[in-house]
Length: 198
Image (cartoon, rainbow, N blue to C red; front, side, top):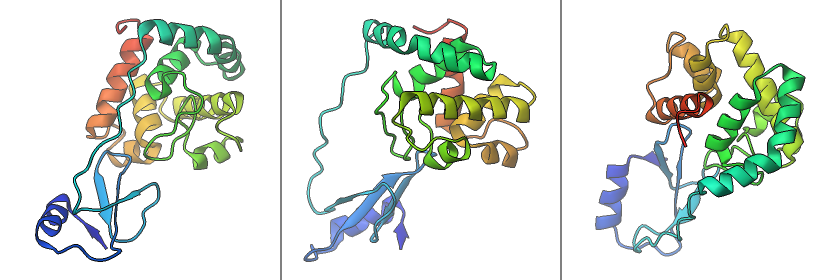
């Protein structure tokens, strides 16, 4: 059974602690909280009767560290971009936003590696190890090239589909879905691609 946030707060405030009871929570791809009394994919168990103490938040990469990482992965990104006829600057913008050039990055939604490729998408485009930078870049770029063809080269729709999935873009009449995460993603990648964001 899944509950809304209000129900969880009410239960946590009024219910007595149950011996061995667990609640599981995760964020879905659209940033919505999913809470359940049964395990969810990617969810972590927590005790609603105890105060939550978050782990320390990692520091955001600095411009210098991003530049160093971009230099490290640049030749591979250039190679894969050429293989798929894509602009390497666009791949750099996507990799910056998706993982900050971390080949071991893992999102709350299960996306992996430099281009934050979902395993099903990786398999669809021939990758079986998304923590391998070359496989990750090839799968992510192949998907991006497919989206370019699917949406007639419209960069905004390509990026929206890369973030939210082509199905979400199609369901919203081939427009950017009304998800804050997706809209911010499109703006940020586009700005980086055109050199307007440091």
